[in-house]
Length: 215
Ligand code: ADP
Ligand code: ZN
Image (cartoon, rainbow, N blue to C red; front, side):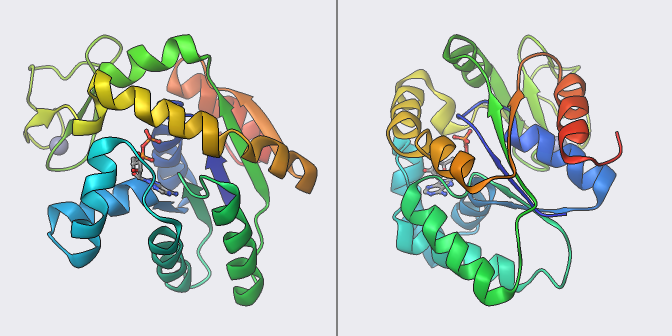
């Protein structure tokens, strides 16, 4: 099973990917996570991407597409979830080419629909563990001890691009570049639109039903 998971920032792609990894042994290819890891490790890719992430802007297509190509080449037959890629039509076209070359196909393209009014609260309240990446929310899923990860004891912090000033730029990039992909993938078929509101388990139940995997 191969999936593209897309939707606005804060729609829950990362959360749903984590559930799919755990329950379906799929491999997540999250361009956002890959960029953040590269930045943390100070690699050339990280140095190139940092300014864009900090500003809430899209990393240039050539860089992003190269990164995904590398990841697709490493799959070894494992099912994948593309999380946060493609983010515009140029990337979508490039992905089509890569998949064709590799003899792979996407079974479903799933879009997580969350009203814009909810996104801001989800994003400004999000906190993440610096060490293991576990995601919290100050209201809906706080860590037991403020600032300390329940799972590993690491430091729980706000992502720099979850500050209100940067969120507005991310939402603009989404509106301008990513939202048009809805029509692009609708026309291609195997396109599923999901209600992304409610608890993560409620959303997962809808997702599992739509793509016919176990719940
Ligand atoms: P979210 O979906 O919550 O905005 P991500 O972790 O997916 O968060 O992305 C964070 C940032 O990483 C984006 O704002 C952008 O700078 C960069 N990024 C991630 N995926 C892409 C992509 N496909 N193309 C360009 N930039 C990307
Ligand atoms: Zn942790």
